[in-house]
Image 1: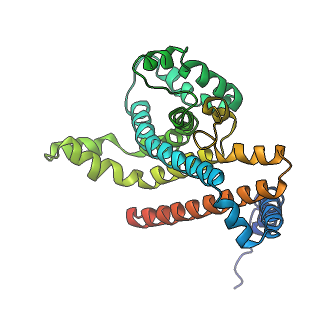
Image 2: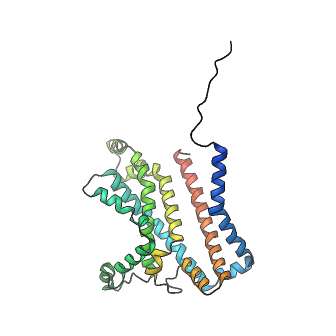
Image 3: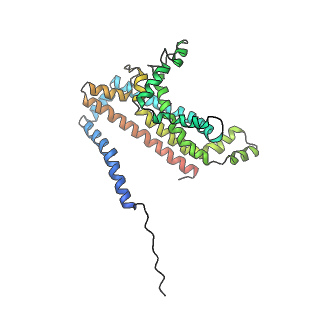
Length: 280
């Protein structure tokens, strides 16, 4: 006896082939081809030429400042973002929705507006900058001001990466841990943080990537002083303004290589965290 014919309802979404083709098309047009063109343009200098430009004191100082402060800002955002996500997820209080909306302000603000606002607040005649200036601490137009700007623009990435994962953790697990005699620190490090490892790594990567390439919110508060507060993206613009296309291309290629290396290491750490927590 023949089995009755079965009919499969077609999916309203495209199949694997069209979806993969569209993905590769747009990824190539928007990401791969422009980056390949950059590398091809820089290849005319040769590896020795690129390394020579990277070793120039002004270029090396700008690269150290950009990547060093970006790493520090992303690391601080791991702590600050975790605390903010915890407060928004675990507590109900007046103004919670307003605070939740304020977290996304760096997403919505044009970067130039953020830079002007930060400069106005942290300059010597600003509300916060004026207070610290009494104690001889200068914020605006120093690396400290750049650091604050990078923390400002990177915080939302950490909060939004951790918040949904934290919301899925049942608070009863924390109560059970306390009932069994665990201290608060033990509960945090042995119960709460392990499931959040992947989210923290993701937020760190996003915050770092945003900070490395940030220009608008940093260029105003940095002061753009060579060897002191000049960031690498600004140096690229300076090279172009000087009609030094080769130098600008070399600095951009160096930033691309360093960014790719850092993100590769972070992705490897993320994969390790997923295997360790059993989520991947």
